Image 1: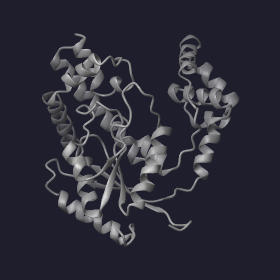
Image 2: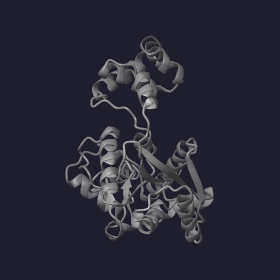
Image 3: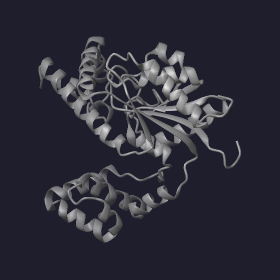
Image 4: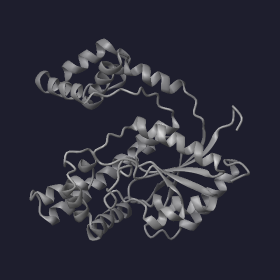
Length: 322
């Protein structure tokens, strides 16, 4: 690859349960690709059912990367993901295959595509908790005023009521000594090394919600409760980040007797629907994405596959070796 040549990268995004796994595998098969998961929970070992990981057969059919990377009690950040994903893209390309980045964690995808500038040490859990306590005692306006003093640019871009982002900006400054707006500037100045084609999958809202509800029922039937019980018996603390994720925290509440099973399923479905809404809001803000609408029974998936392949060929997206 010449210095000016960019790595081809196919990116497939969309809300949970829309059918990304199925379409990604079919596209990878047709385009001689390997899949890189962009799911913040699939990186954890032993969380299989609740994260809807590709099955062992699916992973044999097409090579998958960044699944089962760390144990549930190991720290894993977006910085770690970015580094591993970038390495995987280069390795896949050097094997003469097409990297296919797919998943629903928008931050992970943008960190890779847009070359987010990270420092190795940019988080401080203790400091974050202290800032949260300070907000409770003195109000969020007090923290926002501090941010205006140390980083006026960030304060202009962050709403005063967005306490999470205000705390994040203050935490970043405390750890690095650098305003977070400088990090944003470094990110914007970086040129992406990828020739990326982004594909977004969606379907009518009622159909998506129906698929979400069926998926939750299927997870329960396949043994999600037993999976969570096994994690707790293995002495993984219920407060670990992966065990507080969607589905797992719901089952923990059931196991602790806080909810009946029907309540657990109801809240699991409701929160998954809300999660899908947030995913769509995030992805719709990215004008690079080419959207395709799926039908709930996936009856037109062949047509969509052909349309995507035609678009790839029309854009000369891949080199002749793919």
